Length: 308
Image 1 (cartoon, rainbow, N blue to C red):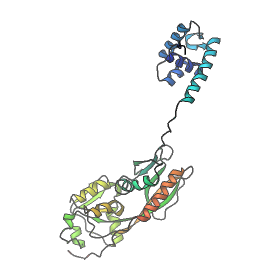
Image 2 (cartoon, rainbow, N blue to C red):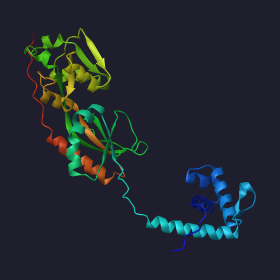
Image 3 (cartoon, rainbow, N blue to C red):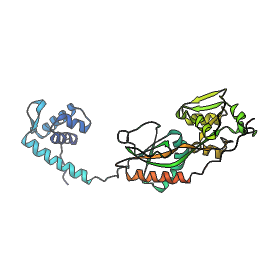
């Protein structure tokens, strides 16, 4: 086969892009080079061919008849090359799940291996968020939030409750070691831990237990549930822990729940866009409902003595 004598392939690509777009700036944007680089490549191509391919003022260049023929043929040739190239399957865009941070760490992520085993074709990306969001603007496929029980009304979302919220005081094994945490008085003597992401935690628990604690002598506040629960495990005081967040630490012995748990007034919900929810998001929503049903119930609340 005779050796081909071709001009610079970069020059041919630059000229073909200019021929399609009709503007240097658009060709430069496509090729990720400067306007001047495209202009130089076209001039070099004209010199190599000994033929004028463009005409007119520099800011309004147009193709000559020879340039038009060459540009059209180059487009066809590059299309043939493009079609002949082997294709790698485009990676599937991850399913984006917006989730409460501590729920993601303590409940959702430990269960994700099961989802991936059942649905290896659905990659999942977890985004931590506790605030408002927009499905379209934020690229969210499904969101996990907390809502009052029975509140399924939403103008822009399809709401599915998937797990009940239980809460109760949790402490380090050291604070619970002597078995003395069985009365309201002994509970009241402990430093009380709080989180800004659920400020009414202690108030809600007391109302559900039907009794008001005396004000704590020491209060310690943390930005997130995760920090507060780590502080409880470190022995800094007693925290109100949601069952979904603490069941792993209770099973491992890092935390103790000597007073049991009561059912809260809210539940965990999966939110899908009211229109246009993807089939993958619905698969994940159904999996959440199944996982919520499989989550074991917490220990029942115990009766507290009136004095220590």
